[in-house]
Length: 419
Image 1 (cartoon, helix red, strand yellow):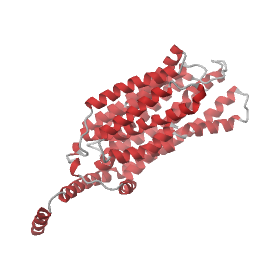
Image 2: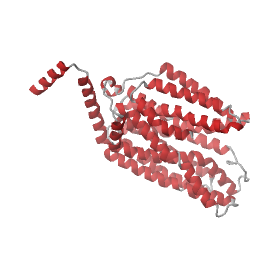
Image 3: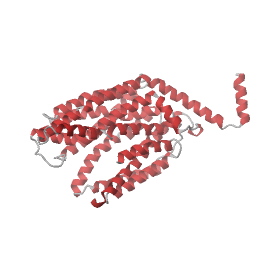
Image 4: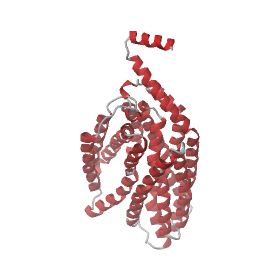
């Protein structure tokens, strides 16, 4: 429910982020996140509905922060520096995901109560809230691109959406991000259980009632996710900086290579799980590294193909689509396919593994599809980037002229007519 509320609220925060003080919006959203997370850890079993409600409201903070923060970074830095800073921001997506497995399992095992993991999160969130309030600036929109955000006039939300739907680079890259989210959501949810079932099928572990049978799978997968996230994001941003000046469409090509390269790696990992767990981890590591090439590069693409006053809306719509059609449904879809296949031999532990293995084979196919989406992005990105730059200059000029007194406008028109 938190994810679905996140999806619903993202467009709202995108609208607000393009028009009002972005720093205050993020502070408000993150404050809600801290309070809701801490409150949910004290709910008793008899009030399960309240736990569900509070966990859903956590999506408020995530929607505000993930929608607006990249646009502030985009307005603080430009060129190679922007790529570096965006990569520093997005590197914590896979790192945070991996640490969630490690720290969550460790705290639950140490305390014997999963609620303490929820009580640790607000401490870290409060630290982030303090740093955000004290050190984060609120730069003018378009400042890093050499444009004064205060002189750029805003358009209606409907006009913003129409503009984005006509921006082919934005549309195709958003479809690519959706495929990427589908993969990461399915992997994050099912990999520990998949590896646990593989070990049960091989006789390495005894069957159990709660999955995964051995929590070490979560630890190992968490460590792999952290390491590959750091390596992949750093490598992707480095390649982007080196190739961008020589190859105008280098960024979407990097994303395409990452997606297309990860597909056979995940296929190999799925197939090898029945015979070799170490080999499975190796191919998962390679696949996640290739997938992580895209995080920072994708954010950079959005920032330079969309005009400054529509970037938060673009972030929000991209987030909404990629979660709605990606990681919100991929775990459920794979689970449904696995359950449907499992009915043929419901009492077999080997078939329990095989049914999940066959459903997992959908992931490499989606990876190839995502790679094709990014190849389509590469066809349009040079033109769309230039159009964004020209439109920003035009909007800024129109905004300045709109603020001039009538006599000055008449004088300017007269001078232009003479020229």
